[in-house]
Image (cartoon, rainbow, N blue to C red; front, side):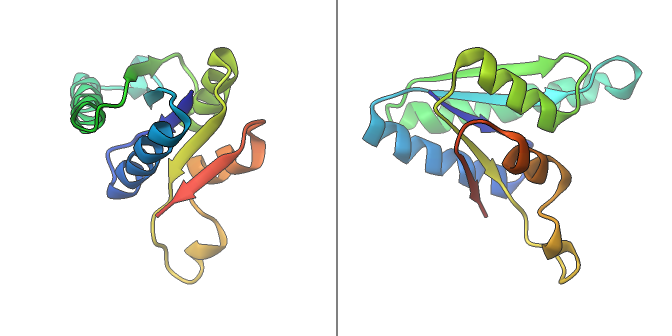
Length: 129
């Protein structure tokens, strides 16, 4: 299984496109997740947007004939930790994350979620921009 972290950015959907092609080659399915902290840090609009992001992921994978499961994670964790812990729970073989273009200073750090996943995941991580 290939886990993809989606935040709605074009980079995260580029990671999904990579995962779709990789899933075809490996004959495996994709698990797409969108992480929200929950509680007073999450509004109902955030949940609705998360569901829209996951619906788009289902449409993209479905149009390519790739099996996909989607999960809205609201477990009180930061997104990077959520992605890694969920990848461990489902025994994912790979994680795909999107990275955004940054300024010269910003290029030193990929972004808090992507950087956390790349540095801490047990699985191979593919970063896509």
